[in-house]
Length: 441
Picture 1 (cartoon, helix red, strand yellow):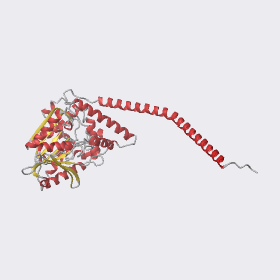
Picture 2 (cartoon, one colour):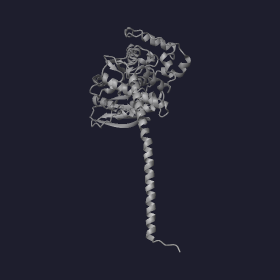
Picture 3 (tube, one colour):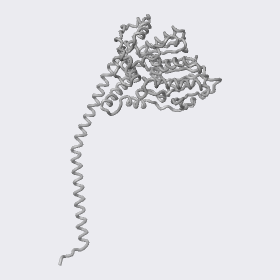
Picture 4 (cartoon, one colour):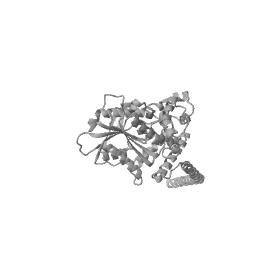
């Protein structure tokens, strides 16, 4: 007969077995963890070294590319300019790398980064703001809270950014400053951006919003006869284009004035003297200008070289530009006369929109210029766009339109964007000059 062991004895054996299994499991897990660490630690070390190596290469490329820039000795705020150029160069290189790796579209990456550049703005007790839509176009209206006798001036503001960047939020500080210091009601327009929306989307949005505002100005406390169209860089292009388009619309009040701050005014000759002299000057070297134009017009860069060579420009426009550049004012600039490549009709057909009057307003006919409102034009010496601003000034004056010209002798493209930084004295002076013009209209 088998020997029966006490129940407590079975329990003791069971507990012992469980403890042995647990101990074995723990030891096995510890062994596995130790082995994993033996593999992971060297792997992490290698990955760290690779990341540091890649970072050093990236920083080296950024340094090398940014060192190609030319910073003229007489230029204003060189420290700010160098810092911003390095940041933009680094962003551009990183965006292109992500694009080539198929991780993220470079333009979307640039636009994503631009959102982080938007400073937080506290509410100003002297200004009332409201976000609206004018015929489906987003706008932000800035109104002074102080009482006003009669209707105020109104400013339609089109932001810059190469038709690719910029937003209502990015220019919030600028518009608040204009409102607060001029006493005008400012309407900032959030037009559609390339490459998602190609030309003429931005122009159409700005024209639509402006027509709506001119018709409804009194609802915003604005005198309909005291509306100023204003913009910087790409926004300057849209300002000129909208003012020319308004010439043909008869059932609305006419703008009081147009304010163009280092505007883009033509996409025909990208070898004007200012392009040659400032080819490598930040923040808008020639290469970047061509990039923005091509993305705006075509959504791609395949014809960039042809645009730069001028093969898209028909003979009649070449003759116009040559005539305008024949004045003594441009002969003394010290640049070499540029001969465009032979006219290529196939290229022209693909990019002829670049020569539309709403895209290259400098090319419009005299009968349009004669009907334009008085103008304020700000140009910068160290800017590729300098000479087209001067040419536009001359064309306006030749057609009897009063022009106030403010030339920043030590300025570079985009200098007004730094007006709120204490060290950017030139930018602040330029911004205040714009506001003085608006106040005195």
